[in-house]
Length: 610
Figure 1 (cartoon, rainbow, N blue to C red):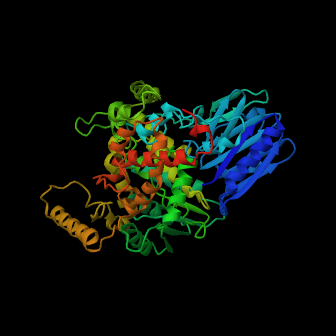
Figure 2 (cartoon, rainbow, N blue to C red):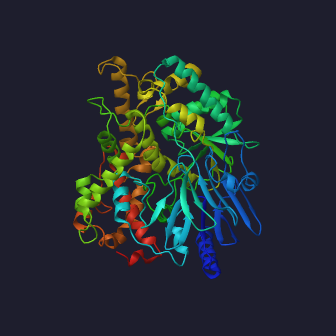
């Protein structure tokens, strides 16, 4: 993971202590290049892998750092020279930029600005208390500041355990919040700190447009976004699973004439690898398969590092592959991340009740809460001596409801915005940040024009992947015809996935194949060929190792959580949980494992604070 942390501090002794300690923390990871700078009252440390795009400028009064890439409204790919030159009092309120990045600009005459991408997917946290300002990509790095005091925020913890992400940007650390999406952190030369709104979605309606017109316009906008985000003079690879989202991206990259390769995580027998091979053979592109299987020691080390640096902001899932070296294949990568939300109707339709077909906050929260802990269970789990559990849980839910009510537009547009701000921001974007170790994601989905186009698409056009399937079948019929791995044991092309009568011969045949395939792999071969299950299922080998590493620290949570209730939801590592849906149903369990590792890895007063 690439990191940056900074403080504005008038005391030179505190500044240099901060620099030394933050540098030491990041240098403990020998695979990162670590740099630091001290300009006026600014002290900043940043770290990245060998292939990450990064540039900085430093002189006696000014500093500018760009980690990643940013694109302005004139479609310029910005660099540190442009950012420094344009950082004046007149540009304090300039609009936010497309792309995936973190940018720091400092001038003794203009002040400090910290920016990230439009949706806040690059993690950036802020601590501002008693005149101390710290900002950075991990709250764990804030502990390098001598005046930072670590305390657990009970409402932050409740939000994470309810939703598998942050609620209203509250983290595990008291007084540490995530920078709001679409905002710039600004500190004036006089010391005033504020969040400046730089971007928000343009909510409008396209009710008069036909489905075919929508397909055509989205097709054009997606191509334009890919062209805008196309890195200059850089080779690229595509993270390819062979699923609908990544194969659609493969089709578009091929269509615009991109010279790219493909990279797939997994073993040669894995369904994802086999699905990806079909795509690469058809498009005749180079394909690299990278195993993410690690030793027991590597798994524990990775899990502990992610628990400490992520502090459960992105949930404690999908950590395998965090150190897979994509950079040796290409310094920048594309992926199909977020296409199901933007094109497939997942975001706009997340609030739909499957029985009444109505949209509501209650349905949205119920679906999101599947990736967390039921409110009643959480109320029983939180220690009464630590916090009023009923009040804390109710407060978090009402705060979440206020966020829904604060959005403008139809209920589908509210669902679109809140889904991008929750599951997408914390689950999917977390995987992007973890992969920014020695390479960098290319993110056409973080594009002003594309996002504004997609929020206007009528729900009935995008729902159940209608729009996404049409884009694939109309533009890339050969890709559409390839069988899809459905993360079960079923393979069908997209047309075969459409609703048929349960007794249709095709349905019966596919069901029989699924049963035979499942028996062959799980009972005859005694191996799990679905990498997605190995990454998420608490009963799989990697998670058994993580659970065993976390178990000795169970008692350290007793100040916050009731031990008897914790035993019910977090049994010992020897117990198989048997989740029917390990992805959502196992999320709260995984988060509690992460919480134990986070508590054990803290070097701050959290061990003593309560």
